[in-house]
Length: 347
Image: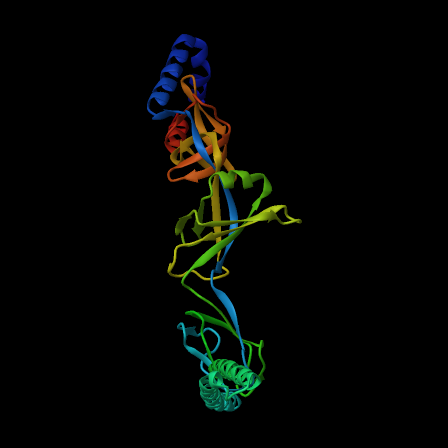
């Protein structure tokens, strides 16, 4: 009770001394806290979008000849190298076609040789009048016809050879098998899907840029890709579609990533951002922030004291954070918010 009386009558009895001590305490409190004066700076205006990775090389291999599958060499999730045999198809029919084409070619060669010899003989006898004009013309036409027959027979050999090669289906590039469309023993026909897969050598990010930002992107066509594991890539190898989606009114953009980058798979999500010019902003050190649940505040200096002032934050950059609202250029804040809080409580 005695102590309470002393406290209650002290300001009344010694008002000048009480005010002086209070001002001295506030001055010492403010002087003991390190401060910084805020300035407005020009910052890059980043547009950040969601993107999805896909393989640059992805294909479905189809049958180019008919036959029954006699061997499957790979299955889903297998890694294959370029040119590796994926499966084999019966080749008896194709082999017979090649043998027949080779026989036709040999017969065409023999007939052509005979026709050329006859033409040369007629050409030697024709000036002597031993051969009529009609017989001479027939010999020339026959010789030219047999030459064309040789070319046709040779083309059929090429066709039959290719058809025989199609009985062994090879991988067009190195990659991973994502789907097998057929089973061993199944009969396939030309155009039927056999295997699907993609190459891991190069990926690209796909994003959709809103129409209001497309002009800014065309002025500076460069993207930053940020993966979930923290890796970042810069790329100016872009393909900006020349038409907008009629429903979303956005432009599709393909962003090529570096080749042979490990641990990139189709379907992975990433952040894609690009510069849309610059804007004025205020950055403060993260140590100046006092956060409690959803509240973000700083200690703003007003006179010789500090006042807790709420702020609205933007993007974080290293050890700084952007302030969108609550502070202006020229304001003075405490660099260490928790030190200011402790001094305030001690006061």
